Image 1 (cartoon, rainbow over the protein chains, first blue to last red):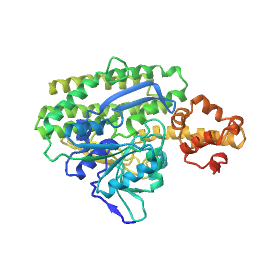
Image 2 (cartoon, chains in turn orange, cyan):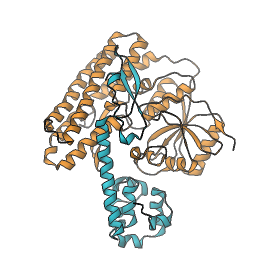
Image 3 (tube, chains in turn purple, green):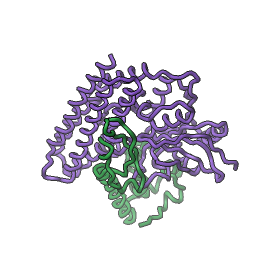
Image 4 (cartoon, chains in turn yellow, brown):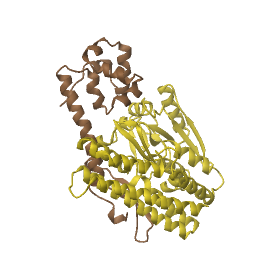
Length: 334
Length: 134
């Protein structure tokens, strides 16, 4: 077959969704960094849902649900987003080929487990991984810019098909999307302000104790009660938090560093010193989250000098500091 | 986190890959830095992987001993748990629990077995007769 290779700017990213958006927009000449995409979409948050179990452990997330970055950034910047789902896998693959033949970059939602280029220990049943397809080689394999990888990769059609149409929670149903950037230049300044305001407002949490700072404190209370569980169970509970915070699609510290990076970039863009200071404050909070992760793991390893109370205090400190960060952000975006 | 502090602990789970982390320079400005892993993160990941592997070993032995159906073996092999497999197949969790027994599995129709084939990406023959590699 005739190979197709559409122009793509592949830049490694911390997180798949913000990375795909940044890469797809950059490739079309709309220059935006990954942290800028993340910040503009107000994706930073905290969620602890004890009643939703993933692999027997509660759901913990540090960002908004899948697809929210894509839709929110496109809306804010006036990027035309055309997305399609398919009930029939063959049709879904045909539509992908057609879009590639038209010279488009195609974003896909896929299941991590069925992508063979992922290392074994990183493969798990998660259906909302984003990547960009930019062409097809002579053997018929797809050319893929997967933002969490250093370099571009390839994938056989049958594997990509399985990854796009895997059933289950957050099933992609073959979701594919194409972005068309606006012709007029975009003014980021007002968007930055409104997105920071939104992030700050969300930080206090809703009425329910599962979100934002309330969610963090709720989780701290739960950790406090872990000594009533077996060491094995307590260990799994803590390790799960650390995994969600450090491993699962993040630039570390539960996206806090990426958010601080966004504030830093915004401060340069707006020539705003106050915002830079807030960015440094957010960096310190990121460091506190890393410290919490370290203490949690030390506790798992049964180091005598770390008590459960130390782990709880460490998490409470993150919550306390996020209260102050929230005030600073609200003050700035008023 | 300062860019010199970005951990380079060569985590096993990364299999030689690197991840991008955002860290600050001397002036406090951010840039992307590649990391080969953080020991703390690696510990948590390996703990989770270990738990899944233990479950797989247990089910493998139980299947060879004829105590459970092939589904009980395939479920941890493909990193599913009862809930995710229920979502992927459309069965209720209590139905899957029954299908894990040899007795009930033997009575399943091909139509029901096909639902598992789709979730595991296997043929009917492969579903019924797992090739177990040690």
